[in-house]
Length: 385
Image (cartoon, rainbow, N blue to C red; front, side):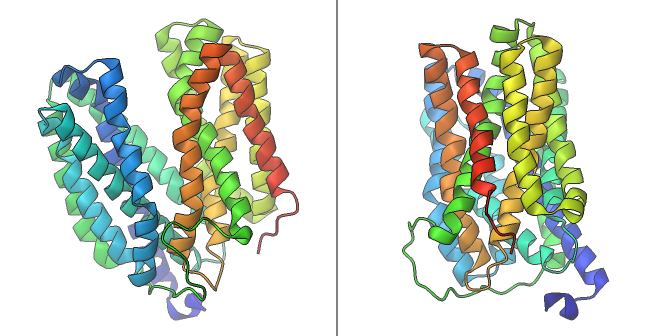
């Protein structure tokens, strides 16, 4: 057992170092996101042009998903993680210096690819570190990512109010995160790649034993990104509030999701992973249903809190379950599951817009509520180990 090889001090060190890489990912991505309006204005792009160029990021992420899975079968997750972090941080410094739509599209494609390298490898590293602990620690890693997201947004707001250009802002964050990367890399867990017993193609879909995990991730990530993209508009258009209240509603949702990730590990120790996943599905269904049935500021806000708690722990706990397999490489397993999961993240939010255009945003959120029910149905009969 790995727990017998490494003492408690080592385990704590590996946990802290892995947490730092989750912080690097969250702070870097939210720093870029905070300057999106500034860069759009800087390049004089309209909504349609900028919407198209933003697609370069998820395209880069999706196309490198199977490549990252293969790399994690050849090299340790810590090596891929530090390489991904360094490339991620270097590319983070570039969007503010672009002078054309094509330059920005190329940078975002590379940014998405580097983000995929970093995110899959750090989750694979987190799975390895989880094996060193008898208690659940997986959701806290994702909680740290959320905290970093808040920090990046706050720093971005400060930079905007101080009239600091996106180029210097992102360059400063990039240098800071590169220092973190180099300092904490030696403290990460020295794992070894696990060779799979069955050869699979680079673009192989998950096998039957992992398909249920993949579909659960799909439903959760579809809901999560829909809330990112449409929650503010739901409050403006359906609830009928001002933009400031809509922004506060999104903040409430994010705070609930972050809180859920920090308490998730404690709840797992009490009632188990399967129960948490079941409750998560019911929370998504109940929360969105409340916001749909009673579209008023207080009731819709409470519904968003339940939705945030619902999406909080699903993906990290599914990754934890999938990482328990002894016959497959955990990095390749996560890549396989994430391929379908990220399809929900990318494809469903635009479909929400199409449904809203044809009917109303209220009906779109009703469709998303079904994702919670799908999670409940998929979790039924699922084994925890």
